[in-house]
Image 1 (cartoon, rainbow, N blue to C red):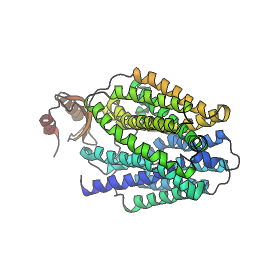
Image 2 (cartoon, rainbow, N blue to C red):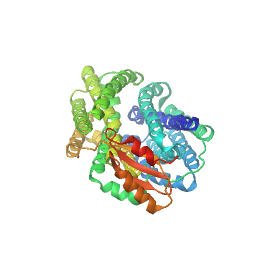
Image 3 (cartoon, rainbow, N blue to C red):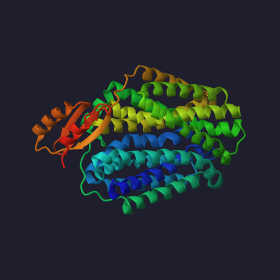
Image 4 (cartoon, one colour):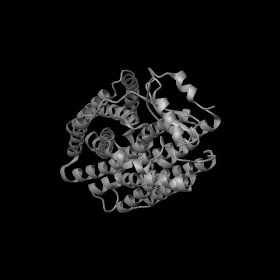
Length: 450
């Protein structure tokens, strides 16, 4: 990669990172913090935990479209300022309703789509996946760091302290966007990274993509609902003070993340992604049901949480890969946009589910409902079609008009190992899906422009 592409990867990953750390520091303690606020009910605690997912899920696609009109950086900086404002509203609140309002404002600062579009503007096609991978790794690391730091910061500074730190981190993100993120020479629509509104309905009707959208929604329902209950398990059933919850989370997260790396490699190389998905969903369901039964045993909780996090991390890493495999090559950005929106809505619904069930039936009912949700997902996963093991490629080409682009796409499709080929004349880019084991690399290279 060029120096600009490396700077793009690191700066955008940093913005994602500081934003996600702030969000996920709150998740493992928000149920406990809500108890000390006015107007507390278990349902409102669940609403406070998930409401940012509603606003983010509804606004991320419109914010991406807005960035096409007014520019990427203005949308990113504006979204981070909105996120900081929501954090300050929640930090100053002594009433749970104001925390809910602050959390909704946080989610309204939805910048993910604009940041992905900016990453596409600033990188060449052959290096774009590397940049996206760096951003993805930063998100995963930030989520884990937030879950571990949250209980420690809460014990020292309380809920207002977490919200204040979150606001400061958002302002750090503004500085990074302003001073460090490169300025794009030009911006245009990228089908592999942005949502094409005209194809969104088709993405939502695609039977395989719809299964994956439902899967990520259920996964984040279960994740959010679980983290609303786990603080009660650790504090009330196992006698661990809030400041010591990280002693449980940290080793489990580290060991579970280390365990999934070889599983992912084996699943990809041996073409067992569907089987690994089905197995992970089954393990997630078993762990959730187990937590509903054995939440008073430290050994049981630790063992079940290890299974839970191992399954969660495997699913979180493999689902986007499956979306890329099932999505038509020229519409991957749209498929990923719908997938991300489903993820955010899952956070919202998970908070509502946990709040409602906890209020009426108690803590165990939430874990049992999570197990039931995993069972529904298992049926969807089992009936999913085996994915084609193809890789996405972008090839810089030179074509004068649409007719020439159509002809070039036909010729590219005839190359051994090329399963799909779409050429966009205006962009001078060929979007391909290829079988890496059989593709004729020399024949492809002959079509590339200098």
